[in-house]
Image 1 (cartoon, rainbow, N blue to C red):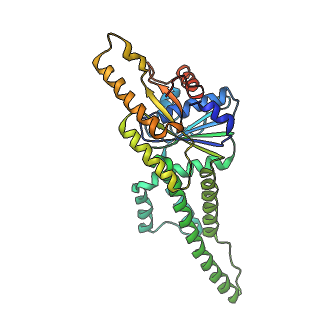
Image 2: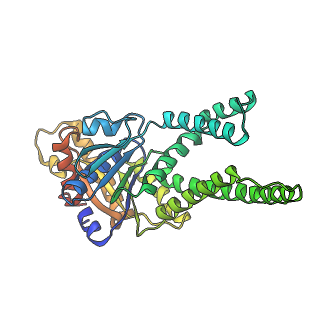
Image 3: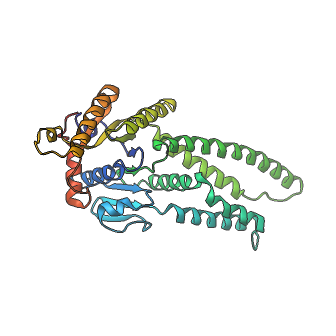
Length: 329
């Protein structure tokens, strides 16, 4: 367990993703790493979060939710998207494109109703998140992108969904190509000039963006996945499941961040409360399980801090513990 400093000395990822279930410290780790890379390494860094609870705003003690990309100070940029608003904006853009493509004055009621109903689809939130991530990376404005993933499917579901979307767009594109060929032939026979297919262009652009971003996410040299875990049974089971998902996709997890660890030395205190004693002993048991199951994957261990890890002073402390961990697993 040498810390992220050692990891970055051996690797040069363009993207770092912190994955795992909610409430384990993904946002804290994301913010702390972004702070360190921007202030200590001089890298132009973007920290991205999709947490609807505005956790990144809470950690940096500044309202950034739904405000777009905000530069907190030189090299450190943050963005916390409002996925609901992004879905709404996306629906409006689809409506505009349909009107433009087909020269309509207004949308047929059934089409508008269908587009509006898509906001209730569970995958729409994820699609909006994925699209925002892909858009930011495609702009190539930063040296390092750090993503605090929403707690669905360990972040791996995002990759799987990208592949499904890519295949779907590819099939639609193939079908549209055939239609376009028939239209071109018909136009030639009629002596008309075939017009550019705006639908086809849109599909090709989407397919290319999805493929480029998916290729990046699955390239272990360019993207690092870290899963945040705490010493409790459900977190251990969840981590085993995540490793299985990574294997199924032919991906490799870069490492585990162990969080919220009580110091073993607390057990030596004579007046330790029964509650705290039980918590420490429980953790000691699960720390042993973690050592046995995936000790080689743990790259850093963070202590249970005496106060909330928010604000620049605490972020600096978390960053130091991430890069040069003092706790020994």
